[in-house]
Image (cartoon, rainbow, N blue to C red):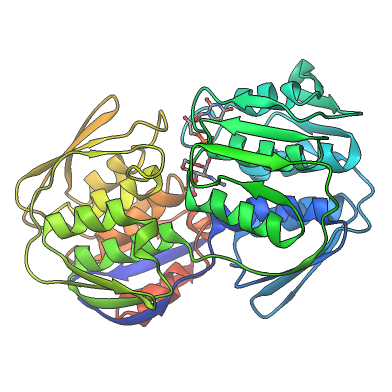
Length: 418
Ligand code: EPZ
């Protein structure tokens, strides 16, 4: 198994280009099913979750291939509508394929996506919305048997702004006759990107970024070339790494407007952050300060995906900072591992209180999930001595080359085989 060896105590300097966004390219890969032709995705990140999505598309009869950082998918030959349990378990966000398969094939069969390290990952909102569009879904025995001989546009109100449900229903609505209105939709930048992709392929979607998305269905979509947006959570991770280790970094391609709640927290903690169309510069010297409570919320609130890495950046700050995780039930699993490094964190349900300590010690720690794993690396940069991070397959799900990027910024980090 691979692991990362990180020598702490070095500040970060330099520039890194931000990878394409995992949470944008995954729904777009599902959307390629609707185009029935070739789509070239430029700046596509090489991630385990992207590989899993490609395997799903190939299982369905599609073709895919890489050329540098461009992934080209051809879905003309799609001849199946079943996603195996094994593939569903590889990546719980595989549920995002359901709406597109139903829109293309009129039927779909897949197993319930399992929960994950973050807790149960229900898809009740996805299924309720698909039923409102006219799908019949039998969820007996953990297998979803879905048929949708004819889907008709509908007014759908989401009980909570679910990212995945909004994306799934946008794709299904492309295959429904007439207009679909999705209210209380998620407002994440990745939703806007999905809208832009669908419209670039001949679709007619509007309102993304706001709480009401409108989809004109029944249109024929075509392929084309599309550039994947930069990954705002990868950018947040590297900002927190520099806040943790000190120094000055430039994140080429990062867009501050997509992570303004993260940069606001880092500025409050004492970092100097400047940004323009080219990217974001963060410089940080000396001890960070305690900040107002960090409450995760749907966009444009503080992103749950940045909770762990910001916590890691604050482990040696002056005073104490309160975190409140309001999106997932079990998103403090990195706390025990950070405690092994000398961190002082108390968890009480959804609340975690981080009290700054003088020093962190390098230790052997284990990734518990994708962003929790990244947080261990952020903390290790500021620890005395060497930290060994294992189970880094979690990190590989969402970061193209976390070790390479941090090394390019001057970190003492190598990937080795255990
Ligand atoms: C997306 O997950 C992201 N994943 C997550 O990123 C991100 O943390 C999350 O949105 C919130 O921003 C991808 O885009 C691939 P949700 P998703 O549906 O769509 C509940 C990462 O680290 N819910 O907005 O699964 C759900 O249990 C990953 O990159 C229902 O109850 O998130 C959760 O508590 C982790 N019923 C909350 O809503 C449903 O039908 C938010 O989930 C759907 C969701």
